Amino acid sequence: MGSIAPSPAEIDASVVKITRSTNLRDVPLPGSPEELSHSYCTDHMVTVRWTAGNGWETPEVRPFENLSVPPTASCLHYATECFEGMKVYRGYDGKLRLFRPDCNGERLVSSAQRTSLPAFKFEELKVLIAKLMQIDGPRWLPKDQPGRFLYLRPAMIGNGPHLGVQTPKEALLFIIAVPWPDPSKKKPEQAGGQHGLKLLASHPDSIRAWPGGFGYAKLGANYGPSLVAHGKAQAIGFDQVLWLFGEDRQVTEAGASNFFVVWENKQSGKLELVTAPLENQLILPGVTRRSVLELARTRLNQSCGKLAPVEVVERDFTIGDVHEAWKEGRIVEAFVCGTAYFVTPVKLIRNDDVDMNMLDAGAERAGYAAQIKSWLEAIMFGKDGAEAHEWGYVIEGESQK
Ligand SMILES: *Cc1c(COP(=O)(O)O)cnc(C)c1O
Picture 1: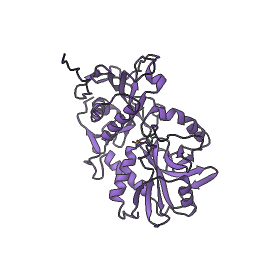
Picture 2: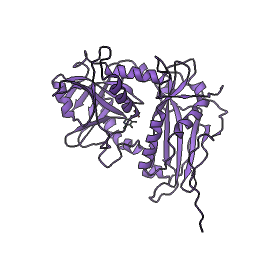
Picture 3: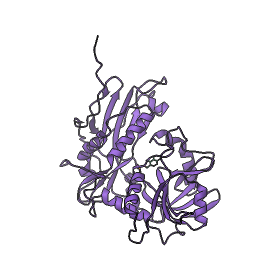
Picture 4: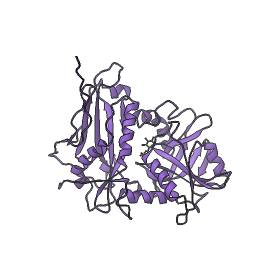
């Protein structure tokens, strides 16, 4: 009969239905219990519904409220859920910025597809966030308070009511913004301060990801089962689990962040910045990881102040390699990076019964993490000549409250 089925609609963030809250919430002060709760959201949220038949519906910016899902919803039983972690920064030039938001958009689509949730045009994610922040930005990140940020959590769930096992026929994309404690404002003696994180290497009986699995996707399903090890590590004073993989105990990543070590190569004696590779799909391809690598490749391939040049290497390495380098005094520094933890030095790694102090060994030659962090900060907060860096996406058109 020649009729062509209409193709399901794409997300079009240029046509957003906006409903403003008439009941604005108090903005919590930095360090307040509300902020420390990690659960107090801004006045509005973005939602976009999807159905298999019609595709994406008109996006909405609407008052923040609890979601309603049927008890039979796919996400509640079959973990059809993925998410992103981003921040929106109030710059020293008064502008609001996102950091490389298309990287997050692309990754959200990739994660969604790994759990059979729908794709969308990834560039639309940043536009949806911009619509939210045009409304909530002025009150929640005041222009006269540069250097502050909100944590953004875009997420997608299968919210259809079919309890039978099947691919999701309905989905919801939503975006919330949450005031978040600033890790750089923590006192040094607290986790993540100047003295760095304590990592507990995982035990062989518990692995985070495996070849053919989904360690490379940002799925809630990666997190729930890892919380047992995380809880045990925290109970004995560690900040994160350093996840090892395989018989040879390859170092993969730490908690919700990617792991780097700067060491002297045993054979060549040259300094290397080393991190686990992406090819085997065991680790999450962090946007911060990628940015650290790109900055190191372009700016640390030559001396930089007191820092000697480093060679940037993405390859498999084991906890045994780290141990050997540590024993031989070849470790310069170790750090983790991610949106939530930013770039944070590692103070100590415990593997079996050996405690490896990462700060003593190379202290004199260290400083790579701090240098990279300050370059990234300049881009995020629009300062030190990085106001127009291509990694910063400026949100224009903030409302007048
Ligand atoms: C989100 C996440 C990271 C860090 O990724 P960024 O894009 O840098 O924030 C690292 N590892 C895991 C497991 C993650 O979920």
